[in-house]
Image 1 (cartoon, rainbow, N blue to C red):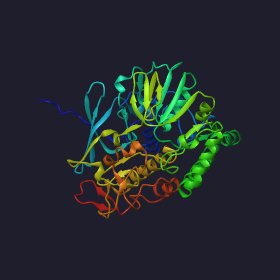
Image 2 (cartoon, rainbow, N blue to C red):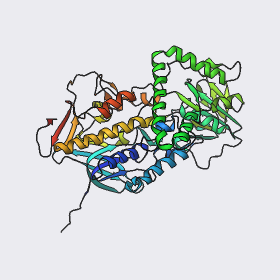
Image 3 (cartoon, rainbow, N blue to C red):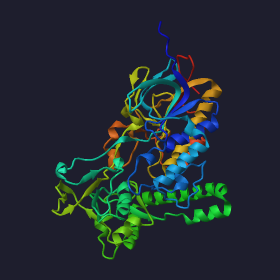
Image 4 (tube, one colour):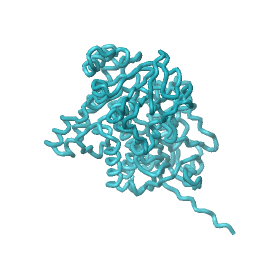
Length: 497
């Protein structure tokens, strides 16, 4: 006689133990200490992005007083910090609140199947190393793994790359033993990763060339926030923290609004700042004047102008051209110029993957993400008891994560108070116009836009990128909404709250 296997059930499963997952766990513990939960992490360490990326100079491009958690002050003097300090902050926060004890490593979620009859998810989990699979069930599933593939970066096809005799590296898979000291390095790309890599590599490399097809907006920012540091000395960490956050949120919002409302004035201002940072007579318009408006893509921040300093000192060069082909000794450009290289770094972006590639089904029907509409920036139409964490693309990621985590815990409290077992968003207007959820011009988004959910043209289906708006929608407003349908355990019909 075979003994039936007992399947472990948890109230909430959080997928991912990076900055979003640790934040979600903190809010869940604070607001629902009676609930059982676990964080499932596919890799063998916490920290997500900040543990994964190991390329030289890897750092934040948002200030840590807003990129860090609202409930855990950033205590370092540098507000733009390297991955090692961010990782120490995340792991310290997780340890302080006992969240690290709830993490289950080497646990990649493969499938998640919702049953309306049972009002629960059945989740299949795989060990990436052994392929062994286990099953868990949960009442709620919270995906906190971001939106790009951890196991694969994006590298476009380059003609002749197989002929290249040097080393070809993607920043997402930086070899631990790679030493670029005294070598000629070409970094292909112009985004946040490229502008981080170039000054870091220029410290020891013989030469570093940033090869870009299209320029990006690049702005110098102070590595240390002097006002924040003064406030911390005067008021102490705990009292200064909320004031610093409010100040920096307001400054970021003003910059964003200025760029959106006055793009030409913003373009001229950025160009003026760039020209002051670069050598006299430098071709600013060729290398630092994008064809799109400011904040149509994310602005690249360089702490203390380190990229510009490397250019001024002759340790780095920017070349704007197209690649014709790789050669045995470097890269030949469309203009005919050849860039000699011992190492070529393809800082060419990410591959998007929503929810870690989990195959979702609802009552046996597969969920096609492109057919769903995002509700309040955190749930999917027609998918019950499912939430996800995607932060801002125009300011600190974590600002939004905190708000939506709070909203999820308030939603759980509402279900408890009224005896509901589940809820799911449904648009009242099935013909509502939609557009991509990540409505952003970056290449890594545009490559995968047809595989992602969509957003609507009105609240609560329109995804806000404004902290003040979201603070009202997610923190202050009621969780009750006519387009969010609630079901009691055992009910055959849905009932709106």
